Structure formats: C-alpha cells, structure tokens
Image 1 (cartoon, rainbow, N blue to C red):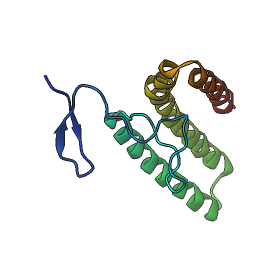
Image 2 (image 1 turned 90 degrees about the horizontal axis):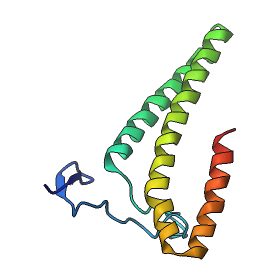
Image 3 (image 1 turned 60 degrees about the horizontal axis):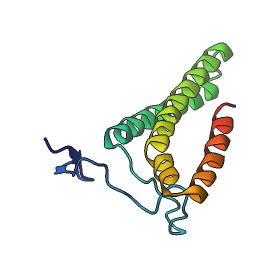
Length: 130
C-alpha cells in the first residue's frame, strides 16, 4: 500500500513511503528570508500542531479579555496554566519530529554534523525544561 499525504490544497498525493525532504536540513541555514527548514515534517503532526496553536491563540485572547475585565486573579492564573500545558504539548510534538527526522539525518550525515546536532539537542533539552 502506498502512503498518502495531503498537498497544500488538501488533495491526496501518493508518496514513496518516506516523508519528503524539505529545505536544506535543520542544522543548515536556509534562505535569509525563509530561515531554516525541517528535513521532513509528519503531515498529521503538522495539522495537529496548527490546530493546537490556533486553539492556544484563542485562549490567549480570552486571557487578555479576562485581564481587561478585571476577572478574579486565580481564574486568570488557572487559564495561564492551561496555556502553558498546551504549548508544552506542541513542544513535545515538535521535539519528536525533530528527533525523528532532523536529528537522525544529521547524525547519519557524519561526525561533524552529529556533534553539532548533539550540542543543539542538549541546548533544546535544557531550554525546554525551564
């Protein structure tokens, strides 16, 4: 069975079984206007993350309204905690994709790329753990 992914317009497209390589890779700079690109992105994970981020955007707008309306501080803090957890959820999904595709490609590319990726991963772990 040939795997199917969705194109930008939502139409199904057959793939060779591997996710497409996009851009120049995580550890390498892309065009100045575009920044770096992921080696590959799981289309289902991308869709889930976009939906989550839209939901989070709505939550943040709700927080702003709560503050403007002088709502009870504990209620606002509870909503802030909810936004934090939602963002952590997106971060976990992104970290999984980064490890699965970007880090794997860099480590397979050779010792120099692997060392650079190890440093990046250590920094990411410590930054996301804060």
